Image (cartoon, rainbow, N blue to C red):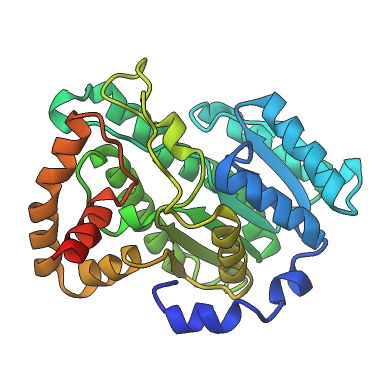
Length: 315
């Protein structure tokens, strides 16, 4: 379930999250749905103090209400803070607001972002600009302000929900893959820059397909166009399982975690250790994936692998 699968599996049931996270201030972006929403719920149950951010204030209030219902937290233990990652000029003030409310930030979870489903030849460059502004520049902008605070304290955790698409490539997601590759490169380069601050931990989380709502809000070929048919998501990893493994990765200070079921996880290893075979597979199955897309069949982020497994089963 991770780049070092046995290591993550050995940690997952030890209860360390329940011991370390109560009382810690955790700021989660993209907290109004999907992985961010489930993170809020599991953190609330553990007893972490929460700053919840996203663009939709009403959805954040809904998440906060549910957090209060399922935990022993009080109203002041959860701060709802509307935040648009693309409005970089607001990030300093947002960071100050969290610090004013809680006095510190122990963990920043960079979870906000959007995916993509479109062919490059059909896609406006404005879409690529928007993807990078949101997924990449918005994330590192907020990180910069929070990191200044963590450097003063000489401790903290910066957790970025990247994707296995930050490790490999896939047709129909060129912009999304590019933004996640950028995040991987940035945080892997930032980590050694912080060598004199061993108390500051950088963790990259790389989920595979997860049953979140990310597919409902993807970029397409035009900024104003939405995806008409999200497709079946039932074969993806349950969100609660993914989030549990994220929390395990956080408290055990893993530098990088690949969180996915097979056959998707196997392709991650193939891409990492046998790239020539991965390129062959991508070329072989990418054509079919594009044909399905053009005919209106929308598959998961790893629809390519899903087709491969089906093909192998038939043979």
